[in-house]
Length: 232
Image (tube, rainbow, N blue to C red; front, side, top):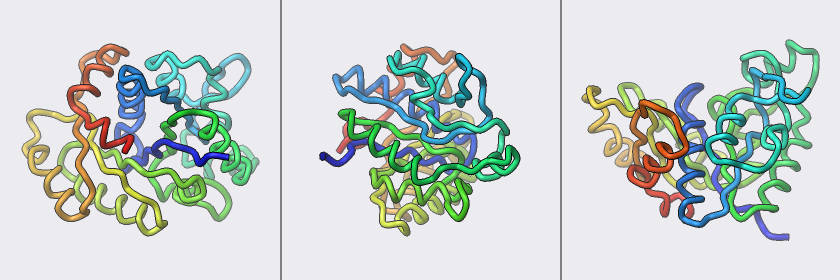
């Protein structure tokens, strides 16, 4: 059986912009003829969709990219509380079935040409008993795209995330920023400094979009991101 192809998107923190980046990359790649899919293996902050708990990130990406799969298939395991997965699971008195999550993720990716897999929180977010999000990333084995904020403070967070990912033996395809602001002076020097100290390729910055539509995400991805560098 073939090895899965795709990218595991790792945010430098919660709300670093990785979901918007994921949606933009998918619509950009699909516009270039790449049959790119999406999976969020574990989520929290569930909403009810046809009687199943689904993370809002998966719903957003499904809508923006026009994906055919039902929402619950794009986010097969979701917990209620807006917490790290392990904390949310403990609040519900359940366990995250880590081995099942790994198996489902690999199987899902193998069935598609290319898959964007989105984590929950940062790479050291507690996922299951004795497991971090980074453990899932290592078990799946996809190259990693690190997504961070564009402005002040992102150098530290991005370098720490890249270092953590590499410590698990994973390849960092590169890094990109999401939600760039023109009035943040640090945004102009941040990419070069992160690239200098990490050796990871800078693959672009998504601007802050006044309206989140599929067309706006497509245009932003094609104009601002190095999609070729992402698919290798």
